[in-house]
Length: 230
Ligand code: 6GU
Image 1 (cartoon, rainbow, N blue to C red):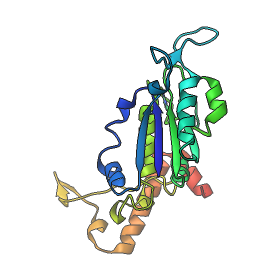
Image 2 (cartoon, rainbow, N blue to C red; image 1 turned 180 degrees about the vertical axis):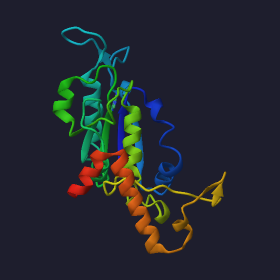
Image 3 (cartoon, rainbow, N blue to C red; image 1 turned 60 degrees about the horizontal axis):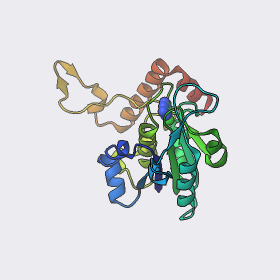
């Protein structure tokens, strides 16, 4: 799977996708991530990527021309399954959308900045918009990194059996159960007995009960969805 990320601050994306599981996915050739600096597609001495909003008001707006030039350049090289815009006014990213995006081969991600992009770019090119939550980031780069991480780990072969995404929180609309490791007693607190029993069926059943209880307590919204059957 290939991601092309369009940004006015490409430096923000240097580190988050180059460690741990994302690094392994790239090393295995399962994930490619290219970051494009929109300023390189801007014209003029100042290579201006933003401008004042028509109608006045605070903040700047991302100019359409450099974005269109970068998108069209990439489209001339390959076709894209999705062109995603990261913006706090988009629909909220969730696991089910991540699952769907993980089936794509080529995905572009346009990182919003300032007051956002000229609306005509959204109308012309954008196929999906995503927000990562109800708070405002200073730019869409961190949201793009979150998207690539959440989607990248779902690509077949990226995770091994131990880290399999099948048992993640949200994968079945339930939160994951609590986990423990050695020592069996730490500062007087014991690990639940059943986990030491070696009885696989009892362990599975305990974990499922814990997932249900946790979800009901912490995320009644998810629990309701689970009970309705997704
Ligand atoms: Cl995708 N971008 C920005 N700038 N802020 C956000 C967001 C995205 N999602 C939540 N807040």
